[in-house]
Amino acid sequence: MNNSQSRPIQLGRISYTNAWPVFHHFDPEALPFRTEVHSDLPATLNRKLKIGDIDMAAISSYAYGISSDSYYVLPNLSVSSFGRVQSILLFLKSPLEKVLHGKIALTTASATSVNLLKIIMEKFYGGKPTYEDAEPSLENMLENADAALLIGDHAIRASWTNHGYRVLDLGEVWNLWTGQWMTFALWAVRKDAAYRDPESFQAIYEALIESKGKSSRDMGPVIRKAMDQIGGTEAYWQNYFSHLCHDFGPDQKTGLQLYFQYARELGLLTSEPDLSELPSPTRNR
Ligand SMILES: C=C(O[C@@H]1C=C(C(=O)O)C=C[C@H]1O)C(=O)O
Image (tube, rainbow, N blue to C red; front, side):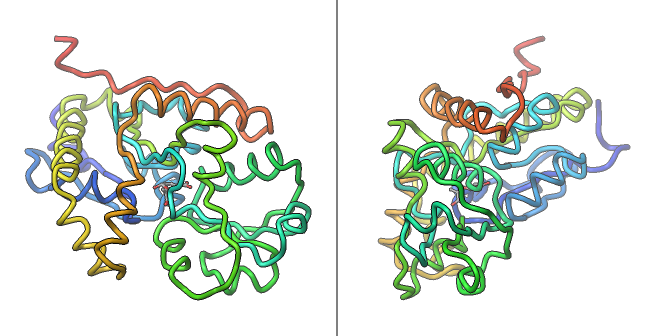
């Protein structure tokens, strides 16, 4: 269907640097149809996609898991790490033994990592802390909690301050316990939108893949933008991006399925998520 009479396609883009390599060279103006881009924190995009305010977005992989019946996943796009990720960080004010039965402040920006933290605390370490949602500000969070979870650029900035807290990198802990990849974000499209306008979503998908490819061949522009907007050195960002993977192949899928399984075992998910990919309109012609 031609979307010229309906509303422009609404796209969600994660504002954190971890997703920039996929979006940096993506130019919505270059598409032959109207699109509007919403740049937001993951939790906001999770909610907007679920209620249909937006049609396609990078979202928390956990949010995909809860609503997978309504979504297709876009092939070979993710934010993943095999081990250290450096931006999913638990800052400990108290010793770990106390944190395990104490209070943890959770950033309201996340969905995947708050549930990953619960898996780590309860399944791996045998703890039972209480959790409290909080705006992502390290000092405020730790005023009345034993530990604080931050993600994305909030975690990066906090890791640069001279805070003196012990820090756990949840990508690293996950990998040490499971030997697996961890996928934090996926790109999802609402099925109802994809049925209405398959060609347009395929075109957006192809443009995102092209942008990811361009970034992987030369990270210079993304690194310069990160230095400009967030700060830090070229070496910092080179190292940061070298630990992130934006593919979603069999290895990342196996890691994510294990995360979903553990989430189900803890009652954080009720059914096995369906990772069906967006069907390509050209394949069906
Ligand atoms: C790697 C990261 O992954 C992010 C973590 C998310 C979550 O915890 O829900 C969502 C999107 C990802 O972009 C990060 O924030 O640093």
